[in-house]
Length: 297
Ligand code: HSE
Image 1 (cartoon, rainbow, N blue to C red):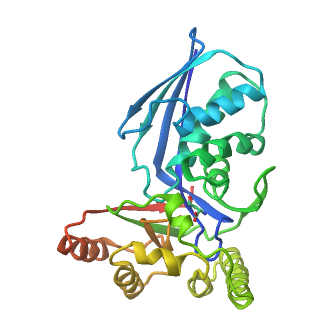
Image 2 (cartoon, rainbow, N blue to C red; image 1 turned 120 degrees about the horizontal axis):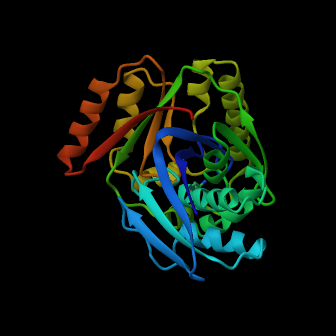
Image 3 (cartoon, rainbow, N blue to C red; image 1 turned 120 degrees about the vertical axis):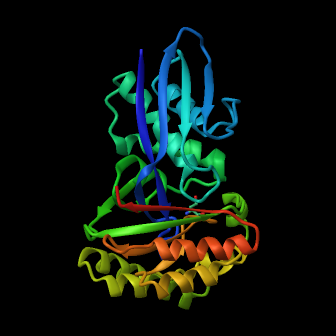
């Protein structure tokens, strides 16, 4: 018995929404085929990326083990994980794997859990990958759309309205960044004035999205918590941002902990020239860059 599921990549933080906001992408994500086996163990087959094959280190199996323990299921599984994007890119790769495995198991074993209930087990996988139980990739990956996380565990959150013609340009330079390192460089405390600016931008962004006010989205997409520290890890960040804004972007920021960056555009924007300019900028420093254009899934 077997099931095949897709769990999308996602952009988290989304400017001022550090650990709170995230949206799911089209056309990128994990395809997981989960098969029940007679063994009492988990076997992992990775396609398209090098992933840990030890079930105690692989995000998908850590999440799956936690779920199986909760439902008292002691059978084995074979997991074929097909990845069509790079782990460690800031696009919620660990979340995709964790969500895919617990959702697939719940469907296959007909446990009747809601997607919201499954978030708890997927977070156990995220914890192993990044050392922290943030749900801003897990929740949009599991639920789809643009999501705000009010409380992580147990999960409380809601979907946000957003303009139907909003698309994101995903810009992924080949610069290795580990989420736990990108969290470790953040200050442990921030001045209250910084918190106020961040909260004001959150209000602006949520209202801008709901009312399709693209200029308000653009003005609100600044992050005072993480981006000022993390951008130092990403060569070319300021230049890429400047170029995107020159080409008419409605805001720009890091995707999750980077190195991927994203810029918002209207659906009909033609971005070939912008992509060429950015690729040339990175070629000068010997880095490859990949792009993906996506609506919110
Ligand atoms: N909110 C998380 C962070 C996302 O910025 O650290 C990365 O997985």
